[in-house]
Image 1 (cartoon, helix red, strand yellow):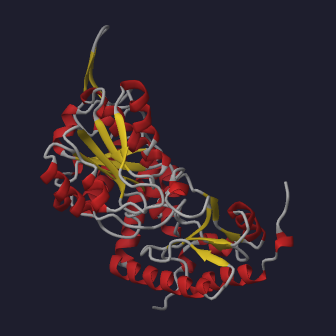
Image 2 (cartoon, one colour):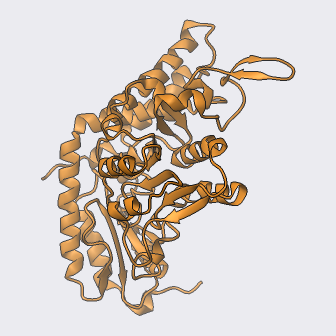
Image 3 (tube, rainbow, N blue to C red):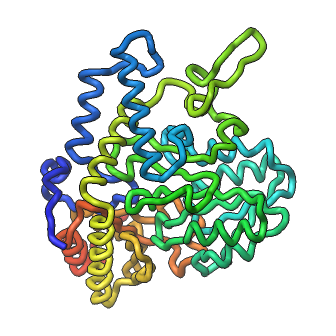
Length: 402
């Protein structure tokens, strides 16, 4: 598949000598998204909580329009099920905090060792404060599977929370398979999906999969930074407690008590990141126009190409060759991953070295850490070639001591 959309992304024009291979951390932004953010600040720049004029009310309508676009993208029943947050991290904290009142000592939460810390630490905090028990579905030296998760379910299991695509190793867990089998074994178990790495690449149907919660971040799919969302089933809109208390999320306030505003306002206390929300809508428009099938086909071809090229290098250890999605984890034999990432950075190739916030992943792969190169729709074979060329030129003497 041949096309060139780099012209849509000002980053490439401004950084012509650099190769960007860190889209799993954050995506580059098309000009349409940058223009959208500039337009908000230069033309509108008002708080959507102000409903006293048609001018300010229009900003509120712009936000609700994005909420509807996300609901359509996820096939949610209602846009009210979409709660805006600062990103997937706040989203997972909102869920864990909101569920804490319904969890008690010795209740079990199933996680995997491949999770991002955003899907580890909120649950660990409940383990420390409430005495719940975290159960890791996969054993050491094993990539998580759906079967391992289902096998871990007991009568004490209250929550299963997992990333359906790993941010470091790129493996995929089937959401619908886990949901169906989990509810057969324990009909009351709550399913939380961290779709942060999935949503930039594919549509997910939350109604068909019958999950309770799903979280993601907009900045990994072309929007501005600092914006994300939670999808939640209707029943949680009234029962779940909010994470942020303050302006906009209350209905009535007296000296000694207050009531919540209806959802989604209930969960969105404080002035929203309006520019980020609106930019997310423009990002969705861009991806819809580009085409989701076309996007995935391009990424799969690129993943196949980089696997092929890296496999030709005898000193390169390719850790996740079988992973489907455009994340490549690798090392050079005898070289620390962060030394290699630093070397590539000096070659103007942006990658990530270490564990990429998946801090327990060293337990499930045969490397203490890896270099991660991650791709998106604007990458092409020339970017792969630049990486491969730099790896071919690497010598142990290129390592810089700090």
